[in-house]
Length: 371
Image (cartoon, rainbow, N blue to C red; front, side):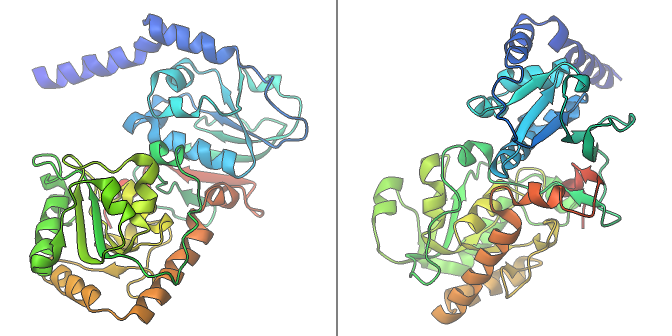
């Protein structure tokens, strides 16, 4: 009873905080000053009209990634002045990464005098100048028709704002690691029961323990990231536990591009993790249990190595360590093709506003639905 009351009180505070807290009030005023002065004549506009703070879940990183993708696709993002979701561009560490980009802010859609595309979580009437409308739903469900589209995972905004994509790797160039994993592996964080109980997946720590056992004494744990990045020595399995040895964010995709395969372990409490997308960006073929969780599922033996349990993961590790180079190059080309079509910067936004769909529904939380 007291626990539920505490959560309710906390939720109420979050709702009123943007209207009362001085830091939020200053941030809101700072954003309002941007107006439309940075818009260039003839530049296509996408208005992001979000009243529901749910768009800022998980620190706003999915929202920030979507905005970055709009910018990469050549759109000028404009934000309506809903106090909670606008002030968080300054308050949120993830969203504040966008502040150096050109963007516009309006108090009302009535301020716009030219056609635009609209992404909104409002169910109100379609404005006259909105040529295409995307309605956002926060329901936890999968797409039910071709007019619906699921929000994908992107490269983490802290990585996407530091590296140039696409990465300039060459498909046929030999790599110095057959299997690579880099990421946090802290106990009590990456071994949560929800992954097994709700999703039926191995946790990150379970995957790493199984893979390390299958690889035997071939596991190499570098003690310095820059030294390993500069070296060409071949290792069958390179393992970075980044709470102990950090890889600089600006070199993260370079690290992934040194490996033939990436052990794509799940996140803290959900299957998908940004490191999967980053691995594909670097041309590392993913080894994973959740291929079906991408909006366009990966295919075993074509652009990923998929497994279902401990035994099949052990088999996957052994087969990858013995895989001939020609097969690896063929799979890496397939990974590159997949990335270019579905994950390259701007590709999601181009699909979102594709011809034939004047009105669409964007599913923000499809990635949370068990398959």
